[in-house]
Amino acid sequence: MRDFLPEDVRKREYVIGVIKDVYERYGFEPLETPAAENIETLMGKYGEEGNQLIFKILKRGVHEGTGEADLALRYDLTVPLARVVAEYRDKLPTFFKRYQIQPVWRADRPARGRFREFYQCDVDVLGSHSMVVEAEICSAASEVLRRLGFNDFNIRLNHRKVLTGILGVAGVALELHDAALIALDKLDKVGRDGVEKELLARGVEANAANRLLKFFSELTELDHAAEIAAGEDPDTKQQALNKAVVGRIVEFVGDNEMGSRGVDELQAIVDYACAAGIANRLQIDPSLARGLSYYTGAIMEISVKDLAGSLGGGGRYDNLVGMFAGQDIPACGFSLGLERILVVMSERGMFPENIGTAGADVMVAVWSEESVGDSLMLAQELRVAGLRVDLYPEADKLGKQFKYASSRAVSFVAVVGDEERARGEVAIKDLRSGEQQSIKRASVAAELRRKLVLP
Image (tube, rainbow, N blue to C red; front, side, top):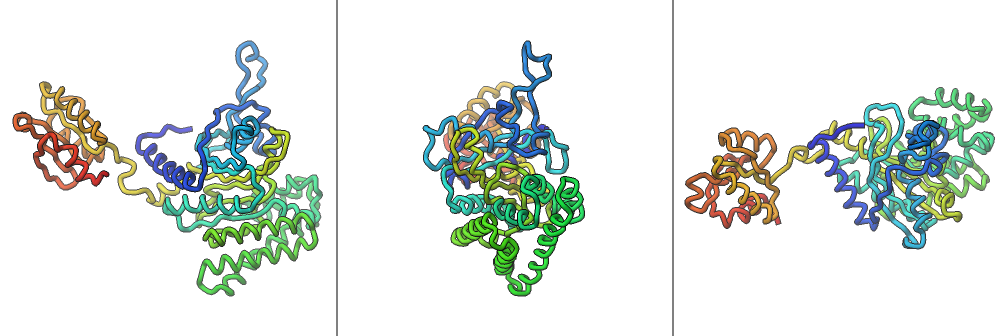
């Protein structure tokens, strides 16, 4: 859990501003929920490992000594959304599209880009089974990343029904599917040998584990074949690879009903994504599992070249809201990891110039103790005109005031000395060019707006 200095906050606000703008242009509406939820609302929704990372809040007052918890800090924004939809169903539209940007808390081990308190930036659509939802959500997430300057990313795509079919055909017992998915989700982190050890430790039979991992090993051979077929065009290569991967899945799952339904839905998402112009961003990856237990359909995760971990992920969770509402309500969502995005953008120098230090448009200097009141009035006049104005708080040497303004990345300094006051003028110094000119006081605001190219 961290403090954020002004430079950090400005960078965060820049990224959040881009995210909000994109989400609202896709028709999503804002929602906020409390930091704490009833503990029973959260427990059991995130799988075995997720439950261990929930920050519990002990009972208060006369119950404090029991050591029992009745509340918990929210682990994500999806479960609170499900509770809200169940509670306010009659007040929400048939297709509820919401975005939510708030902090969540996890009792995790801190690491690079991983914190115990961090913001999530979610979009979700509730009320529709259509795969158009998945395509729209992937399109919105892609546009956010493009607007922020990311070009080397893919959205890895898989389907829980496909995974169920693959696990079943491989011979993994149904009651061990969740355990197998937890292990499988670590394939890109610990490799085949590490996953095999965990599968066996979780009770998966050796033959089933070998057959399962053999299937995923064979997929790596498809990448080379697709590259040869596509030549040097990366977009053509990705589409060829997706086609080859789908073909291999179909071959493996055979007539498995669940697996076949998952393949059909995957193909529908790819087709809609093609119409939305983002087919080149989708990478069908049967090894993607995502450990959260509430996913029921498509699952997605953003992968950036040469970056460990992801910048976000999500999927379809058609049964989660039903846990609260008593009836199934289809839902699909995606969450961007703000903290990791900020870390990567800072390391790669992706922020616009001076965004971390850009503050006031102009600073009003104080000529003397006797002119403090006049400086206050000028600052207010400029603020009323829509400018961002800082006021140096005390009479000091002008050189020192100019140096301070420069350190704050202020573009202009306004000075009302004795001579300027007598002429009804204000001296304006452009710290960017070093030029200085005197302007009639009534025209100062308009002239500054012109120089700053403000509307």
